[in-house]
Image (cartoon, rainbow, N blue to C red; front, side, top):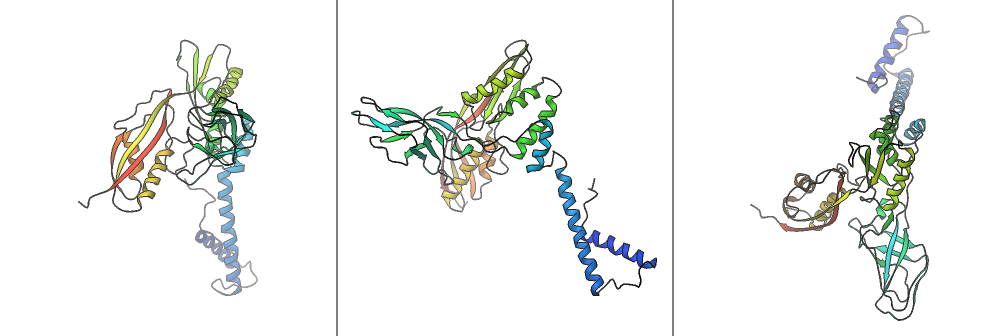
Length: 380
């Protein structure tokens, strides 16, 4: 069905000239106007253009009157009707270890020291600031220190082993690293329109009572949660409900789980036994050799790696790549299609995985690492 206010410039001009001709024929004008040229024609064309712009504006406004198509501040306005506000951006926070080889004497790490990652595949460097002072005491080679990202956003949810450089010299300290489970609270981007629109729909579904949609709405009201899978068919026995979370860093931190649990326990019916938990991690290491036909090899490998990485980031930074969700298998067809979309790739020789990776309904595929090499394809 066409939108009533959707008119082309030619349609506006035709309607306008038709009406003026009707008025002229009725004798309502003091004299006949030449509609083909002269000042009258110029004024009519200007008026037609103005009307056309008005119709374009009406189309824009019409889109914003419905939550399903509204965006930005207009969508925020719709969400106030159901008590929702856009989730704000946050900074990543976690623990790093400062290390040294010498064990004699105390090495002081002052508050406000800066550590950072090496440039990633897109040239981004993430910096972190120590939130407390610490001392590597005599006889010890390391100490754990709490740090916070310098910038807001999920980009600072870096993988273990990526924070490796000390930006501000610390006497007596040789190196720094972030280890497994280093994150204490995830960094998040400001909530995008798609996520907010989904929560708007959930807010209306929540009105129907304590359904799985209500639990999903409660979970996603917590900053840092990008997806929640509600298992409401008595997963642990009669009356039990499990809420499985995906955070901005994939597997959620304990702080995020605790925050969602607090909301769920406050709002749940008294007879519901609710468990908020992280999905089981299905670790995936991706290794492949690409056969290339043309192009710059380093650029092709980097683009392929970026597309593979996007599978494990939510929201995905690559247009057209949907991130893996809780309970979704990682198929070889999907991996292959991601890389074959890169110009210059002829064939992929997979080393790992070599078959589809099965993921249970309460599990999540987690990227361990990507190793891509290349050879130039034969001319045959």
